Length: 311
Ligand SMILES: Nc1ncnc2c1ncn2[C@@H]1O[C@H](COP(=O)(O)OP(=O)(O)OP(=O)(O)O)[C@@H](O)[C@H]1O
Ligand SMILES: [Mg+2]
Image (cartoon, rainbow, N blue to C red; front, top):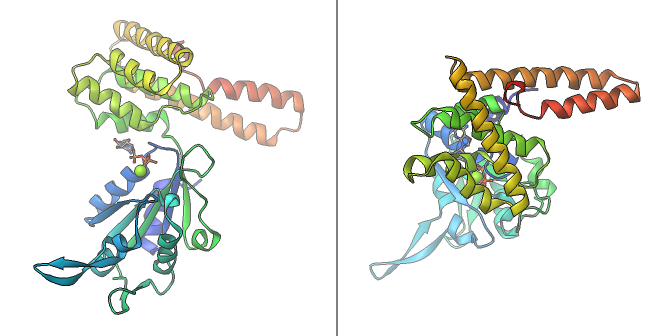
């Protein structure tokens, strides 16, 4: 499978509009902001909602020193300058806003400004459009399904939670304290994602926990407890908090018995699990025998759990 980031980079290079779809806190906005920074582009992030008006993106007449003047909206401005535009939470937009986007994503890459003497604006060659959205599956209030004409103009890239090994690397940039807490948090998040909890922990949740510890003078256990309480019912909270405490204790014991960096260790363990998982998935795909498929499914479900050494 081609990696998400490779697809995103190719689509941006080829000037094909992108739609990044995935659960909240999985890194959609972050990835585009980082890419824009790397490529030295100005990025306008538009937080779309049912409140976003056509005037605010196209522009409107405003009063300046007693005279009425036209002021370009954020989209018009970005098209003229050749900047990048990120339409965040695109499937919450009003139909009249989406109609305008339809035109922008056409081969003509242009818009007409009805309130500015029908001025026609063609996008500068370096203008790029990227949309993001949460899946329109009912879990996210206010989301709808984009119409086929719009979807047809874009490449849809599905964003999943990061693998534990990548997530450990990602979290390192959010804290000066690169200790075993990161491994404990990633283990906990991985557990919520693979054991079919509703509303699993996202990378954003983990970043919040690390921030509370680093800047809010909280212990990592208190910070984790706070976020878990906020997100889950009492029963689920108890289960997950116990799981986290067990993980932290196991990591503590592990650190005492070895010189190996616990972060590197847990990354290796997760990598092994992932490889095993991929082998099992392949084997399952070729399997015809139902009993053996069930055995493989059981093994697969176990690879979603924690690494052996921390059991
Ligand atoms: N690759 C990454 N490296 C480092 N940190 C990351 C990465 N991806 C995400 N994060 C962290 O996770 C947070 C949440 O990511 P982001 O805001 O991009 O999620 P999102 O998918 O856009 O969520 P939403 O659907 O709620 O808008 C970011 O603010 C950042 O701190
Ligand atoms: Mg976002």
